[in-house]
Image (cartoon, rainbow over all chains, first blue to last red; front, side, top):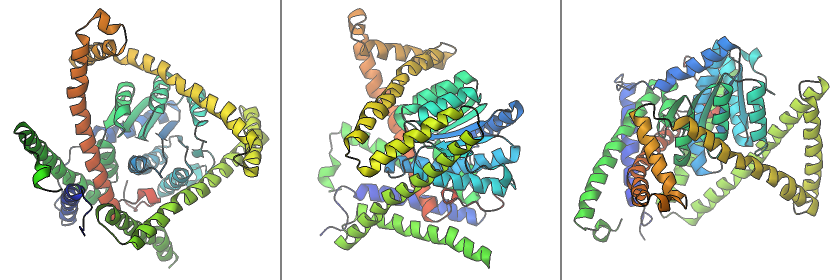
Amino acid sequence: MAMIIAGRAMGLASMLIVAASILLYMRRSLAGKLPNLRRLPAVDVIDEILGRCVEMGRPAWYLMDNTDMTTPSVLAPTVAAFQILSYTARRAARLGAKFFVPVTQGLAYTIASEIVEEAYKAEDKAEDYDPLETVKYLTDGADRMYILNHMWSERIGGAFFLGSWYHKAVIFTENAARVGAVSLGGTDTTHNIPFLVAVCDYSIIGEELYALGAYVSQDPIQSSSIAGQDVGKYLAILLILIGSVLLTLEIDITTIFKI
Amino acid sequence: MIWVSERLYKAQIPIFLQAIFILLMLVEFFFTVPKSIIDLNVTLRSFVPIVSAAAIMLGVVLLTISHIKKISSRGEGWYYSIIYLASLIITASFGLISVRDFTFRWIYNNMTAPIGVALYSLTAFYITSAAYRVFRARNFDATVLLVCAFIVLMMLIPVGAAILPPVVPVGEWLRSFPSSAGFRGMIIGTSLGIIGLGVRILVGRQREHLGIREEGRG
């Protein structure tokens, strides 16, 4: 009986190589050898948006759209968005920005509440955190009208659209732009990236969502893991080149190696 | 001592448990494992909707308290809160009797679903206005985007091919090669990002989603 399920050996090998390189970079950072990382412009944008909101006396909103954590494809961007939420909420508390996080899924709601509450406590601003209003549970479906209506009535000054975004991406971002809010958008759902890039003032694309989370953690060990991911990119480039050559020569490698 | 015990239940136990669960799921996905492990994973996955349902209850309770407060303080738009409360009581009552009950299904099929569809249809209008905002030849990149979008739009509309026949092969080429190549690159990058996220969670370095933030960070 084969140990590895047929057709998954290549995936396992690739994942192990990437995971090992990430762990290697994290281990190196423990020894003080930090990799050079390009500073993501989005890090400064977070402060810029929150600062603008404080100056204008308008609220900043943090929206995550689909946060159904029972769906694997939604789970990863949602967890990444939570990490950025932790940083953003803390910065909002520090700067004194009115912060609002609407969430449409129960599990994500409890996690988001916990994250934002901890962030306010960490900044000694626990009194600014309102358990009923700062993070709010909105039933899925009804959230669209609530958010559109309140975007206009509260004249939001800034908005973050991070996580797993679907059709609401264009509705919310377009309204935020019309109301005059500066926005940062980022998702890994490929079919909605164009909308966020087109409408938001600043955007992060695909893996930058995950990189930003690690970057803003202020933890050098987490940040170092981003450098480890680059090994995976080199591997992908190499495999694409090999695949192109083999395809041109009409060699089917799967008939030689049963992978 | 209290701090140690709080850290234990709030940080160390969840991190330890999530590492075990991640390894169990990975092993099941890649390797042929005994049926006992598959059964264990099925049981673990069945906990997710249960925990999620409990969390929804918390959200609904807090939302209801928020609306009750709004009514009692006569806050702005307080009368909408009455509609929320009435809707909640009526729908929940019928739902508790039976989710297959005719009235409950009628409420969903004739009120909830049409409102959702109507709101969904707004997307078309917002896409149009977003396109108007974006498709301006401000610089070289924007001009390339504008030209490509025009070709693909002309290809997709029925009359487009009749007016400009070359848009069909050019549009197909744009969708099949430059567009697909870009998207696949994005998917590879995203997959690597997810592996990185998984590794950070597995070794317990990323813990913000557990509501834990180490002092000194940020």
